[in-house]
Image (cartoon, rainbow, N blue to C red; front, side, top):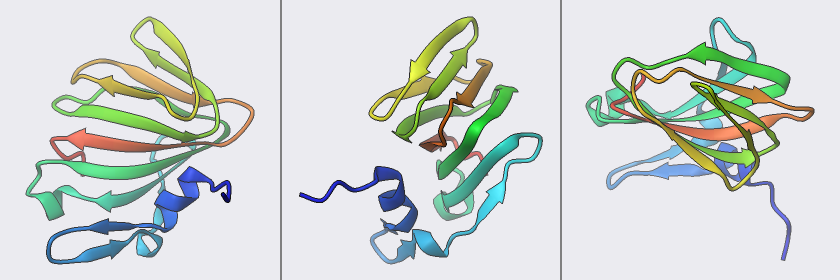
Length: 130
C-alpha cells in the first residue's frame, strides 16, 4: 500500500455537504496575523454553518509558533497530521506528533510550536472562529 502524507490528503481532499462539495485545493492559504511562519486554510467557516463551527488546516513552518492566546467562547480541537512539536496548555507542556489530538476549552491560554520540521494539523472550533 502506498504511504500517503495525511496532511496532503486533507489539503487536496473535499468537504462534502448534503447539497454541495468543497474542493480543499480551491481554498487559499493565508498567513495568521501576529504569528511567525503560521498559515491557515479555512475549509468550513461560520458563514457556512450559521456560526456553529469552523474547520481549518494549519501549517506551522519549522521552528514557527502559534503564539500564546486563548479563545473567549470557542472550544478548539486539534489533530496532528504531520511533524512534531510542543503544545503548551497553561503550565502543561506536551510533545506532540501525528495521531495525537488535544482539546482546549474556552479561556485557556495555549501555544503550539513546531520543532525541526513543519507541523500540520486540523483545527475545529465550536462555535465558529471565523
